[in-house]
Length: 406
Image (cartoon, rainbow, N blue to C red):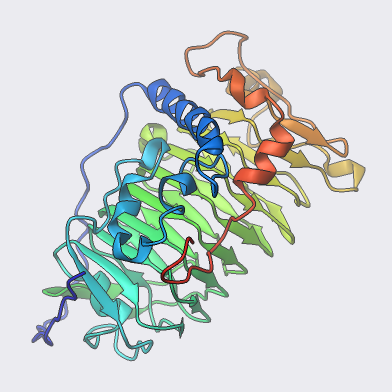
């Protein structure tokens, strides 16, 4: 691997307002083909279990985790994504940037060697860490396009300050880090590229905020206890995969779609796969608006109000998940239809196929029996409980050591 050495830049002293650059739409013309492809990869991964001794049936993990030289082939990870975000290349085609400094003292003039200095660069970069770090961000970490944050081989925590914003950029991968205890920040100047910085109003305090972004993949992260959402995907974002994450101790977990009136989110397509929704979660796993959402092979072991909800007629395709209801009999229902009477929501397309319901959990479907909005995958209905335990058993940031399988 070639390490990129970047010398300090001379930054402009002009105060400029951040000007959003809209990313071209990444709407998939036939989302059913993507859903079918996810199913095919899961089946192929299962078939390989007899060949790969470290195989789990998780097609993302089985793509790279069996390689004992993963640290020398880091950028191969970019070829392992599935679902709507499968084309997120991140920094695959760029150099390695080694973060050596956990500080974040200046959001306008970030120090070379810091995470903030890495993510704002113009060229594609694959960002790794020299050692274990706890990074307390002074302001939002505003990412530029074609970047990968890869925490493998170190214990990396972004905690106690602002967190990550993916705004009007494309091709971003966030992998293998812990993000927690995020705070609201803002009303400050923040740099988003080597040549530009501007005034940021108050942030929401999300762990990961995807705002008008496309081709984004959030994988194997451990997420908890933030001021607003853990992962929010809003304002026309699309082509997103959220996979293999371990989410705990949070109220409003995941918002997909800005508002009922923001119809640009009708193009939104998000895959939620192989995640573990764990202890201390309350609701929104996810809460959807307008778009198309494939929720596949996740393990729902805790919720206090509901698991999957939505408004504004989203299409929700739930396949092969395991839902363990809370003991409180009032909150056994997986689903929550919001901001619409039954006469309207019964026409929405919400389906459950091959899901396993435990402790009285139940899913209220809507829409017609046959619809082109869904792809059938019979393999996902086979032994879903044992499958989900296997494919989600290593959700969250992994403890990877160089020279051995991760």
